[in-house]
Image 1: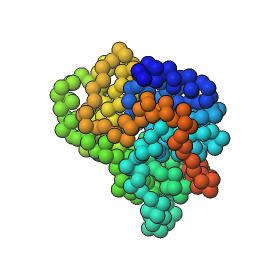
Image 2: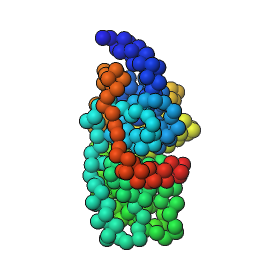
Image 3: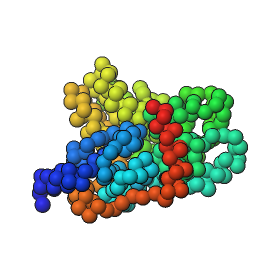
Image 4: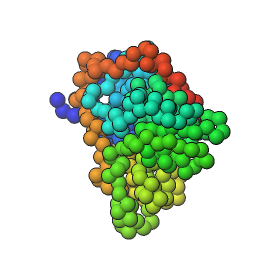
Length: 303
């Protein structure tokens, strides 16, 4: 089959299945192009919560599809590649959360949405990089915060509040590939560009940037800024999203090394097979979903 015929078949099946296709900003260009909605974790979570579709095809990684399954129990949620996981999410287990609760009694547990559904189920709230501070500040003044899995997002949030944070030592392997040297080189090569980096980057990288923002924040910042050039310090797929949405400006990846192999596992062929076979389905046990939904709902309430 040609690419055009695959796309035509996908669009036909999408209509017949009464499906919506959601794609994260890090997905390959051809996947972003067929999506009904592109966005960051928060935007896609909200879209999933509001969707009335019978079928949700989630082009992202497993924790995102799990979140959609929690929020849309009446929908069939498909993840075109079941092996599309998140190494960071796998760095923290429910037992790790419970041990930290024992070490820091009275602290609230806020977990990054980049976590497994089992970890969400033992958390008080979830957050994204875009609304983390609002979630943290939704707890009573002075309450300490246990944060994971991402130590670098947690550290970034801790610099914006007086609260005490206790950080799990997880990280994003893709954002760890963005180095101080990359930012310094970008300054030299693009002296007029604004440098945007993701809060999953290390503190040394964040300090050298003009702004630290989630992917949704990057789109808003670049659209509203008077600057015409931007260095993008996050997963390389974000450059395509920015170029497509803001064609009058130039965007340069901080490094081509910042590529998430899991985000690139979903292909047009896999989306087609998924809609044809209505597999692989992502389901969450009802008891786990009920507990995790409380944490996810608190995330959605802090927009």
